[in-house]
Structure formats: C-alpha cells, structure tokens
Image (cartoon, rainbow, N blue to C red; front, side):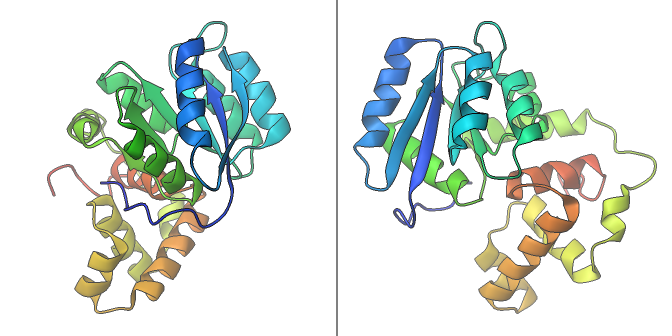
Length: 228
C-alpha cells in the first residue's frame, strides 16, 4: 500500500536508532549510497535517539522498537511530542505482532516495516515518509485492521470531524479504505491536484501528520468500520 518511489526530490536526513551496531552499519551503508539521502546520526538506545532527534531534526528516524533504557515506542512518543511535524518515524522490528503495529501507529509513527525488508523497499520507504506520506508493510495490514475490529468506536464522534466539510469527510473515508489520490480523483470526478488539496486540509484539521495517522483517526472515530 506504499506509494511508488519516484526518486529523490529534496535532501532527506536520517537518524538510525537500533541497539545492534551491525544493523546500524548496514542501514547506513544502504542509505548513504543513495543520492539525496544522508545519515546524520546513530543511536543505540531510545534515550539517545530522542536527544539526537530533537537536536538535529532529521527528516526520518529509523526506529527499532525493542531497545534498552527507553524503547522505540516511548522514544517515538517523546520525539513527536516535541517535534512540529518536522520529523517522521519509520518503525523497524523483527517482530510481526499486532500490538507492535497498533502501538507504533498510536505513538505517531508514519510507517512500519519488518527488519528483513529488502534494500530497495527500505530506500523507498524512507523517501515515502519523508515526503509526508505513510506506509505499512502489506503483511501487517490485515493485523492492523483486526486490531481496529477489537477497538470499539467512541459513543460521541470526535469534535475534529465537525470541522471537516462534507467533501473532506468523503475524501477521508476513501483514504481510510485504501484508495490512492488518483483513484479518489477518478471516483469523485475531480483533478488529482484537487484531491491532494482536500487531503492536505483533512490532515491539518485533524492535526495528524500523514495519511496513516488519518486512517487511524477514521477507524478509531467510527467513521469507517473494518470490512466496510
């Protein structure tokens, strides 16, 4: 469900946070070989990751979930609580488990990939989240929806929904169902540029950083039900 990688459009700075030195070295080697991507720091634990991220404001943090001192989920919460949508967090883990996917997205992560991701997909993922989109590994999508099924929607819709126009609600619903901008444009007989503008307004009004967070909001608010 990740958008295609169209190559670098602007410089992307990356912080690699993982407690395994070989993993950090491998990711650095892969990323620094790419035009337009630079690695601006490494962290072996969550506390150090937070300190470096808030100091250097990288475009993307590659964040391992299980790290000493402060784990990746808590580090993500701390970074995004202090960061004004400047940094996106891409979670990496060896564990394909429901609670990690859901908790990572609830913490504000823009993407979630397993550590066995091939280099090409890792590079594409970094560029995707750096430009403000989000992605989840296809193998994890079903588990994410299953988690939403177990999460009852609130009895009263969130106030943010009232701030959306009918067209914006329509667009949000279609985003939550997995449609791309081009598919939404075709379905609503709009230009793709107009759809992009609607999506931008939806994100701003909901106070979320990307499409993934908008999808989380849509399901948790009860706007969209799994299987609908």
